[in-house]
Image 1 (cartoon, rainbow, N blue to C red):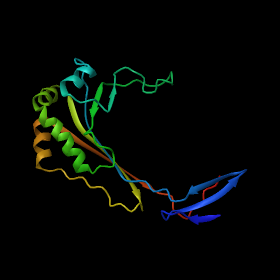
Image 2: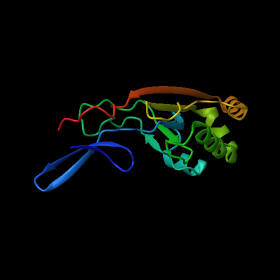
Image 3: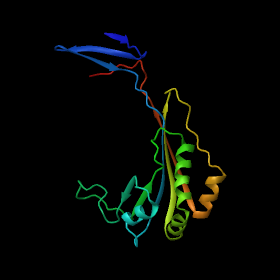
Image 4: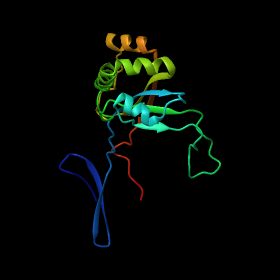
Length: 176
């Protein structure tokens, strides 16, 4: 049986034994923005020391020489050390809010970030996941004067990756 729930979503209802299931046919995903400040190619300082210096817990680290996939004995190893931080917001926050949070963190510890930037490679890595026909406007990336000054001072590169996905139509049937 097909129907529409109280939220206006279409569903397919079916019974298996005495259990009733509803499978919602509208798979709407929100657009995501994943922004991080990454620095890598360091060997004379540990990940823990960087965390202590910056006062920020990393969102991701990797260690040079460790296997990329520890479960696979033939996995290649990481070629360098890497430490990355976010701005403390989730991936659904607008790009500008995420960037401003990261810039706030940098400005509070500018002397530490200047010291680190003189020795190591820095970059802002931004991945944007856009889902077609989800009812949201497409995320934008705006780099203002504040960003430009800090990026120039710390020699930070900016890397942007955009991924576009088609969301399954609400009229497509789900085969079980």
